[in-house]
Image 1 (cartoon, rainbow, N blue to C red):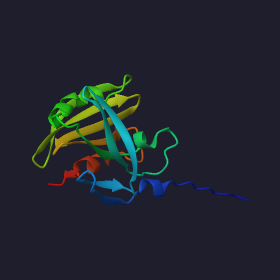
Image 2: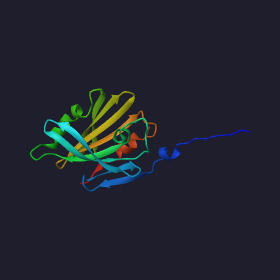
Image 3: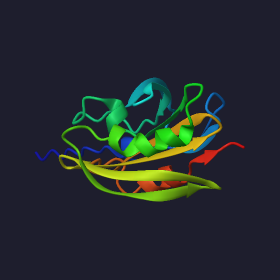
Image 4: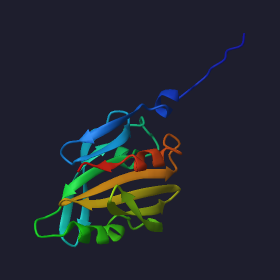
Length: 167
């Protein structure tokens, strides 16, 4: 008697992408699955920025302990009164990477008429891309994995490039 077993993880790989609109933050972005809301903090010389953070769902990733790190996310924080949002952008490169990360590069990126910063960094065998933009007293932060997550491989640009700021 011969028994054939076939294991497949197709549902996690074929996440449904939808345009997500954040009325609190004033942005839209394509997200895999239904995003869940959480928080994220970023330490700056002007204090801690508390982000409203939306995380896309690509399915459970048992190799990662934090879903927010393994899956794409986007969010915004209101800049403290009297602080220029552009000055926060200037600090973004030093504020995002962790001690064990290595910055691979950075460049200017545009969303419509808004200039922002993109940072590519490596942490172990995973390459992350973070983008930040400042507009109307807010800082926008978009986080994705470029490599190291089989569920998101090759889709990072679809996610990052779909970001838009409501005018």
